[in-house]
Image 1 (cartoon, rainbow, N blue to C red):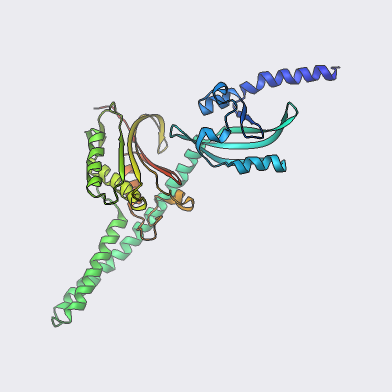
Image 2: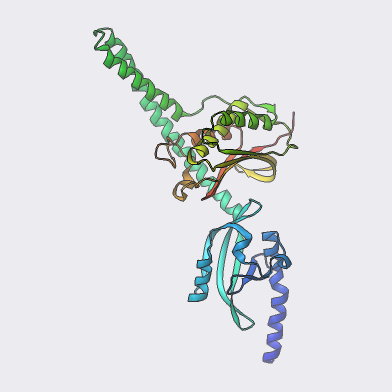
Length: 359
């Protein structure tokens, strides 16, 4: 039989040796929301040591957090634990992680603290979301294309009938048939846009920054608001196989969407980097080129963030919802992936293109 003192020593010994070995990141904060302890896993997760973060306010180490100080203080006031399965934390270095977080009350040195158990779920969430969104995107695209073909066929007959009728009418009456023809042409043009690009990309080796500079030149010429453009390029990126026209169209669609919601204080950053060990459309890719378009606008409404690439979905009342859908199709044709991460004050569209060896 162990004495109570012996059991206490055993528990303390196990706690001291086991907590640092936990895969789950453990963070302890006091009633001022200041960090008192980080496990080894938490130091790795936040890429910062306990020595550096001790007594720092927990939420101050992030530029954005979906957990608020009010919610953490509520744990103290009510004593009720909570679990959030999708906590997004954005770091000063402009990268973000998604966590499953459990917050509970724990007593240390006679005072109440909050024990945060954090498990990173980016990969699992990304894979499941990509599979679901891919299925939904393809279903929506097929539905729209089917409807577009059904609309396009009678439009051609309507236009032809109007042309024949015009030959039997007086010049004054032909005004009405001309209107019918013009509207039929307008609808045909819209249907063609719904059908999306029907030509496969012409893949050739190009310098990605030549494409970025061409796009920057085009948007700078049409910049009535005086939006600031920042170019942050990685000059070490080698040539990559792509269709310059289709990639330019994709970038222009994204940038023009951003410029429409920004005011004169708007800033758009064009950024290129090498990304390693990526999963693109279900395939593992060792090296990829990452193109980012980042703006400081109001952000995309959360209600449509999961469907923003679907046809006919738009965050603007006057939007057609076709630009991003077409951009997604063009990037898919490059065997790449188009992503979006957005909250008020920062929206980032990222394009991942596999970096293949030159033949």
